[in-house]
Image (cartoon, rainbow over all chains, first blue to last red; front, side):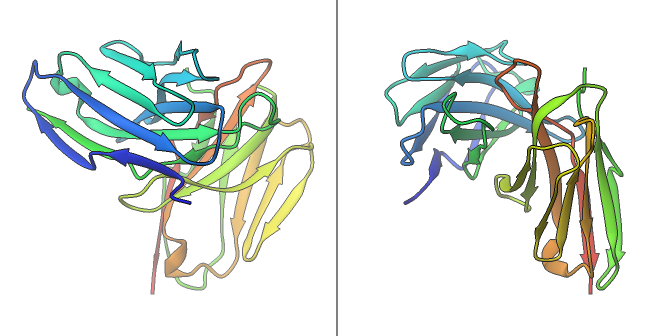
Length: 115
Length: 111
């Protein structure tokens, strides 16, 4: 099993450009998440999908949109990138509400720089 | 608002030393998890503690959940360079669903 995969691994954008970060999991998990990680700020939740067909805002959703394409895939879109969105983005998945502890499995991350 | 406060923020020790890192909150957590993140990679789950007062051991790592389920600690015995990384605690409070993460403790173990 590959677990959680993310593409691309690195990306450089100019201010105003758009892009989509892709995430897929092969663990048959119900829930998926997008986080950003910045120095001194820890992991902050952007959006999550508790189950296929649902999405909810997390702590820092502004400037982002998400799509839960199917049970396996959860994408994050930046419509008009800003330098403040320079960060490392992590996708994660978990079994979902049927599991008591919401233990999460993370992908390797996408390192995004916005110039 | 940071629900989980981790201390110390940075820790640099020599191989063979013991250390303890802390994860504290004013909120009660139904469970608390510890993750380790190595440079350039995503966090990896180490352990989940559920019951107040619970102690779990993972080789040289000992995890404890506070009696009131508001805090946790991670003790590493005889640290090795392979223990180097960012240690994150995370938990779900109240009736919430999403995990709240602390900012982490960055550990460097030198030979």
